[in-house]
Length: 387
Ligand SMILES: *Cc1c(COP(=O)(O)O)cnc(C)c1O
Picture 1 (cartoon, helix red, strand yellow):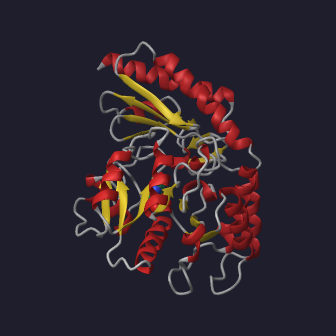
Picture 2 (cartoon, protein in one colour):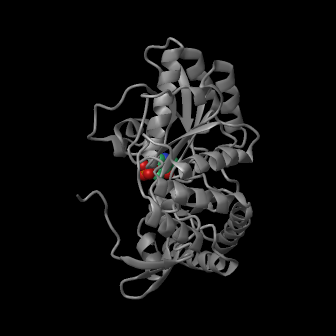
Picture 3 (cartoon, protein in one colour):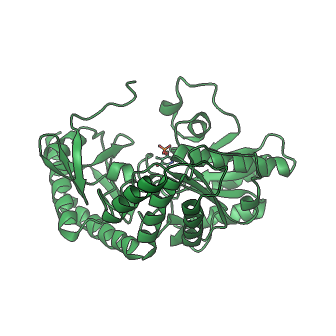
């Protein structure tokens, strides 16, 4: 079905941060399949784990023990400082699990119609519940009636959240991305997430962070909340967890980790031997620390480089982001830049109409980072001085 407006290119091979199309043209990938291939394409450890596990056992079902799922659960909860995890197959499904946890939490406290506070400009997925939680009328239009039980506030606004706390007694949780991805690489004020944590503690709300795009070392820490010194009650992951092999996860700590019992939730494929083995390899690669340090260092290099390259160009409003999640806010719609960059051998993305989004693999080297700065700098300059 025509759910995507595709670009006129097909890739046949990848290696690290490079991709090659059917005609043999080479590209520098500054999108990573939307923050999925954080270890780059054809990563040797991922490939060998995948091949080896496929040759041994792909699927049994969650009716039986799954050794690689248990090992992944141990490594992942350790890396995140969480207690327990449920495995799904995608980001939307991980968020569905988190939404169900919040509702169960409410019902166990005698709240019959529990509400979850969600953010304007958020993105949480395309299933009915996650679409209802998403802060985009464009994504929702035509799919009404939406799922009830969401209260929306502006992102980054603690006063708005406090007002909901003062006026509404059926709230049980807050769901937010630490940095909004699809919404335009929106970084909240530095006191925002700690403030949300404090309010959640005061009110007995669950703090749910959607780290599907920000997690797995992207922002310069294993998970974005680790830039602060608090933990969420629930965190969701997907995208880079399997480096391209579909897997999602809903992690929880404290009371939230004890909510689900047998029969409350499930998934046929979730955490199967194949995807778990690959995600375990990805987690081990990340847990050495090298990748998130590299993301922090190169993120700064690219941000500084772009600021210097675009310093004198009218129409560049802001270069923002954290680690290798970078947005360039222009003063006008700039979707055409995606094709222009592609014609110059660079894959980028434009989101929220006027934000160039860069999500390169975390294994890019300094020379590739400089190539990225140079190409983006020149196409943005040409674009803004010509229109
Ligand atoms: C991509 C994304 C999702 C949805 O993940 P799917 O695997 O496409 O269902 C949810 N939340 C955030 C923040 C995302 O970036």
